[in-house]
Amino acid sequence: MAPTLPTNVQYAIAQHLVADFRDLNSRRSESRETAREFEVALSTLLSLRLTCKHLSDAEIIKSAIFEEIVFQSTKDSVRRVHNTRQLALIAPFVHKVTFLPSPFFVEISLLDFRKLLERLHHYKLPQHCKRHIRMFWGGSVPTTDDGVQKAYTEHQRRGMRDANLLRSGELSCFWAITLPQFPRAAHFHLSSLMGRHPLHPCYDGCGKSCCTDCEDSALLLRNKSLLADDWLPMVAVQSLVSSGVLIQTFPVDSELAHTLGICVWNSLSWSNLNLSQAQRFELTSPGFSDSLLSPEPAIRSSLASRSLLYIFLKFLDNIEEVSINVRVDLPTLTLPFNRIYHSSFPRLVSMQIGGCLISLPWLVSLMAESPKLRTLHLRYCSPMGPKQPGGLGWKMLFDAIRYHPKPLRVNLDEICLDDWDWFSIDMDYGGATFDHDSKKLSWNWCKTEFALYLANRGPWTDTMELHWVTDWNNHQQN
Image (tube, rainbow, N blue to C red; front, side, top):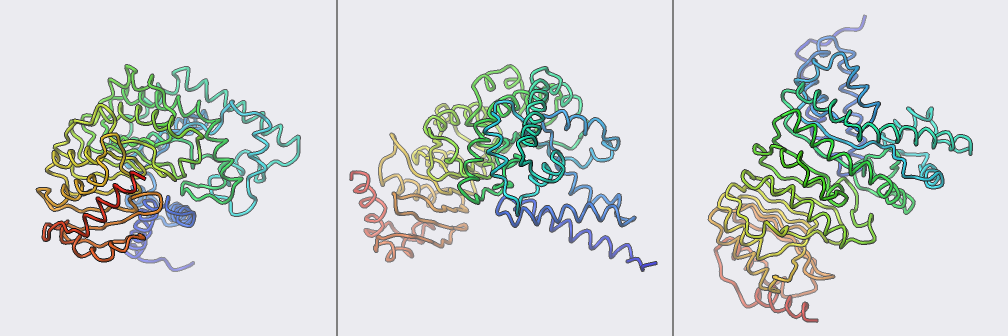
């Protein structure tokens, strides 16, 4: 019989594995490699529970692997949750519930389905693809006409079944009954299928495209899954209202903001949704380049802004954190949303915005009326009009940073100056470092001066005026 490690040593090992697991979980969208490492870490913890008697019921492990539960709008998901006899043992460790649409949809032709199968690479498939292939196709992708036809017929059958589950009200009732069984769950995520679909060979939640065929698959899946995405928020909101659960965070995938109809946000369920305890507004990007998915980005931006307005208005009273992170090749989503232009956020502590067109006067006004603001992070954003006063807008923003009543942690990452110029600033409560890819030689002469200005320890110089105001206005006029 093999020697057994002392219990305290086993527990120390578990602590290190859980720490690695949590770290990888927070970073798994960064790359395919990180996503794979996360899968390995999860499998290791699951195996540890089965092989070590002292760790089978260790709370440190259960609190990590059962922290999030996924409610997918499928008959199979309902059956799994319903048949989980030990749900009561898992429930105390669940803190987050993610609502995910069904991967089966009827709005796809046999020809398009065949194209998806042909584009599935037979090497280095992400885990979500492997699981689907193993579960539904016996471990290999169908290649014969008969095999493809059978797979398509089964896909359609499941799609119709899951659509009926959504529309009948059965799923809403089931979720409403189940949610109160998780007493510590206060974080609820409306997730789209993008990056998580089992026929997506290229993303695995990390937004990395392998080839043109993969991008074509992403576009096809996005267009065909609209119906499932549209129904999910309505049913999820209904179940949250009926269950009466406490909601502290309510992140929404940016893809849902583009596809949702106003009927969702104008519904009685939405008006009754209690977000009085929610202090963080979060719009997440589901791990892909959003601009790949639509030939009409202006229309998508308009729909997104309108939908986001209805979400945002629910948070105004208590909001402390704003996080809007949209991955795009060219910013199109505009801020602010119409009816919040003159809104103030007295409790706002942190604002993080990525991939948006921003009205700098609005941002400056918001900073002035947010005395508790400590962190400002803008990533890949551009200024926009019609209220945008040219290069003076940047001077307005820098003044707002300089004269804010509290020192700020500022990170301006790849902020667009024009078609070929960008700048980055990292300033930690008074000290600044810079990264700037510019053809304007004047910048190299004023880095130190600019750092002193932002820290309120130096004046605005003629060189800085030339770089930020005169050159910018000339570019706008040209």
